[in-house]
Each structure stands twice: as C-alpha cells, then as structure tokens.
Image 1 (tube, rainbow, N blue to C red):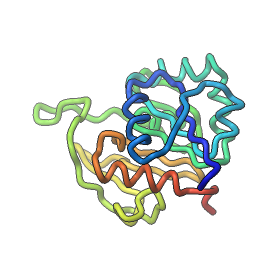
Image 2: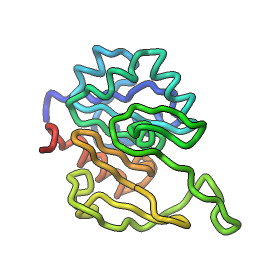
Image 3: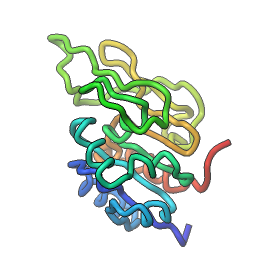
Length: 187
C-alpha cells in the first residue's frame, strides 16, 4: 500500500498523540485534520475520541464533518468515543450522533464492583467474521461489564473499537495493521 494517506480527524480527542505514536511504531505517517477535502482524499480515516459525545459532535458540526463522515467510502475506524459517534445517538446527554450505525450508545450501569467509566481489560466474545480482527479474533466481538456490550462493530466500511488499540500493546498494533490493510468497502 504505497499511496496511502492516513487522516486522523481533529475531533478534539485526548488520544490523538498516542494514536499518532502507535502508527509511527508501525512505520506509518498520519496527519491530523478537520479539512473536508483532506479527509475525503485519505485512503484511511480514523475518528478518535476521549470525552463527551455532545462536545465531540459540536466540534464535528462546527467543521461540517457531521455531514461529510457518513458519506466516506474508504475504511473509517472509530476509536472509543469515535465508535460511539458512528451510531445514531448516545445516551450521554441524549446526543444525536453521526447516524451511520443503527442504534444508540448506552451508558454502562455502575455498581460498587463496577465503576464507570470502565478501565481495564476484557475478553472478547466472538460474534461474526471481521477483517479488523484478523489474527486477533475471527469475528466482530462483544464483552461484558455487568451486561454485554459491543466492543467492536462493523457497518459497511465503518469499523469501531470501544477500546484503545493505540494503548493495547501487540494486539492493538495488530488491530491497527489490520485496519490499514483494508482497501475498500466490504460487500
């Protein structure tokens, strides 16, 4: 893949620098941009995020990226909050999101033994095949934290990981490599 251009959407996420470093470790350069033309021309687009859905959507709307992102045809990876933003809505602040993936991101139920936000490691439960998880797992996956929730999603050329591959050592690096190996929209 000699002519790839990786664009990380400038969505205000706190994980942008660590994501760029993770890509550099894979010997892949990336740019951070909110420019619609640059995003549309990219071979791969990453929508990162840490924080609140309403704030992130506000930043995307300011740059008119809320209307651009759903039209993209190249592989798009939403990470953490970025994955939530791919859905129709978020329970957090009753926020309307990008509307790409049917459904609503719901807040995890808090309990004395399960603080929210959830930080830690989980085991994925395999659901169906997905190239994003090749060599890591055979399918798109869920996990549990009091109740099952989506850990990885795929809808056409849009992929999401609720966790942070840029902070997930060898497995995270492999997930990013798998994403970068995607060349077109799946059937």
